[in-house]
Length: 407
Image (cartoon, rainbow, N blue to C red; front, side, top):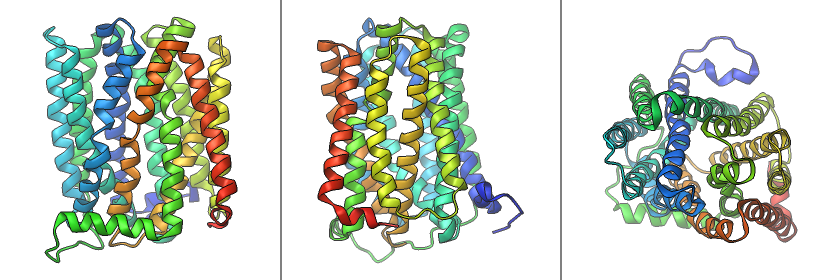
């Protein structure tokens, strides 16, 4: 792998194949960020601004990750991860083109969003274990935290640009036009991945069944106390932290009566916080007591959500959204770094799949909090969600003192 000189914050860009992976990931998540905004706006249009409808569409997208991600992890340890990712991008392109055409022709119905969301979620479940595990194949072990942070910084940059761009474009070319642009992003990602030359360091080819591979991965994660703790801490914000992302469009309409462009800017502010957080983490060469930092950041994430929920003005909401974006991004990057560091090459895809499976549990929070938002209002639902995240993080910290010693 070729290298060129760069500052430490961009150290992993020394590696040619990582650069192509980063570009492919950037295009992929630019598409997802734009799609979240365009799809959310389309849902509100079709459902008369219902937060519960937003939750249902998110369920359709995230539910397949509960089981499909385990299959994706087994595939990531069994086949070449690059080829898996290219196949997924081709599938995403076709699904998005279908959605764009239905929208353009006026044939789009709410149930179409459910079905296409389910298909996109299934592809995401196959995509993420390979995408995350491939990072460790492309850079040395000492660069994994830097590479994960840079990869996530690209993702967070798209969270800054994507929703805002989609919100502005909706005004001029409507949601259908935005979906066609999203398809182009997926095509670019496909060709970027095709440029990668490195293959898996460890590819399973021993004739074992897929079911046995999955069982072995689950057993490996449960027996290792460090991996087990990391996965538990990952589930807590999935249940109580990501409700903000799902309910933000409903909050914007309810609390501030925003339009699509203003909502895009709110999402951009949260993405900016995430970008800054991951770039700061990428710049840190040695971070001691990473388990302790993970728990502190998780508690602050919940506190930031609680403070944001009380915002009644645009200017007041923005700094709290920035804080939530910052804390959530650092938490996720640090958690993924530790999971990759403490898992073996042969099991890394399956461990990543268990981590991705946590996102499939999101319906367990989005549906109840969507219903709670209908009942007591979106701000109060977000307050409850943030407080629960902080309390659970504190409880885990007290119950697992050894976790704080993880480096």
